[in-house]
Image (cartoon, rainbow, N blue to C red; front, side):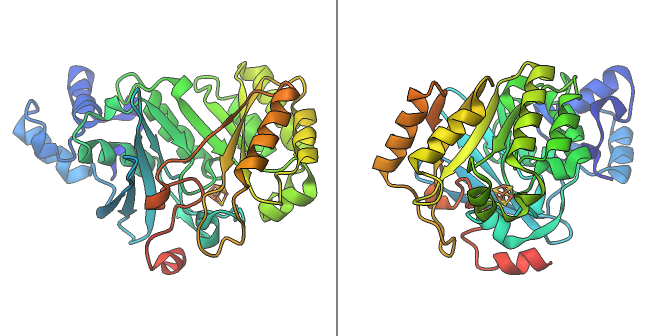
Amino acid sequence: MLLLDLHPDAYPLEGYRRRQLLSWVFEHGVSKFSDMTNLPAKLRAELAETYSLDPFLSFETVESTDGSVKYLFTLPDLKQMEAVYMPYLDRKTICVSTMVGCPAKCAFCATGAMGFGRNLTAGEIVGQVLAVARHQAMSPREIRNLVFMGMGEPLLNYDNVMTASRILLHEHALGMSKRRVTLSTVGLPKKIRQLAKEDDLGLKLAISLHAPDEETRQRIIPTGHANSIAEIMAAAREYQSVTGRRVTFEYAMLRGVNDRLWQADLLADLLTGLVSHVNLIPMNPWNGSGFEESTEEQLQAFYDRLEERGVEVSVRRSRGRDAGAACGQLALNRPDASLIALL
Ligand code: SF4
């Protein structure tokens, strides 16, 4: 059994022995019970017989010139998924996957083109943080920012993502601040409402809106037709009124598709009265996507229009483009991505 699938309160052992075990796993990031030197040898052997601490068979890395590192993990069933480590000057951030592939099929996204493989377990999600920290020779607790923005739609793997989030936030596990854990969703109103009720979590919510009008949005997110923009916005308002949290809207800028000024106006209309932030994301190109990134002039004009309309907006330039690690690029830079989707 993968020990990382368990909530820290359900860990084996009691009292200080349990805290020692948690400290080895989450502070020291060890992946073998034999390295837990302050536990009796017999106990270490018993734990090793019942549990494992490493959810991955192996991983490969691709480094970007900007310091980001993409990790390609191979799971025991030979499926693969990715995480991205982004060291900024003032903080260390990790973008984790919640699925192998993704059923949302966003048209600009390489992961969407892979199709859906399977959900990741809570331990496979948390394990990405531990493996990256080990490889970067740091304590897992040094990674203070986490975004659920890798492969997958987190709200479609709800229970495992909730368990993983509780492990991330638990004071005896990774001890992250809920202000620094962001869940990014394509916009599933029922699940957003359910998430609002997880009052011990209070995660930051980011909604990938990408278009303010139904026609354009369905072109970008073909599976989005099940939920209208009006329903998504109503759920976002409810999330805010229950949690008090600002809601972020992600908007990939696609040339001639969603970057026209009437769309900026429509977006500003949608956001009226909501405490929100819009991230404009220059699209990260990949062969076969069928989209181009907006010109700098159009990006600026769109930004200016939103700002004039009182919308809080910034441009988020993704890191790791040259390593295929940027938003929408995961699943790239390996020849067998389509095969992996079929495994
Ligand atoms: S952008 Fe996110 S939700 Fe859309 S297909 Fe890609 S991984 Fe899935």
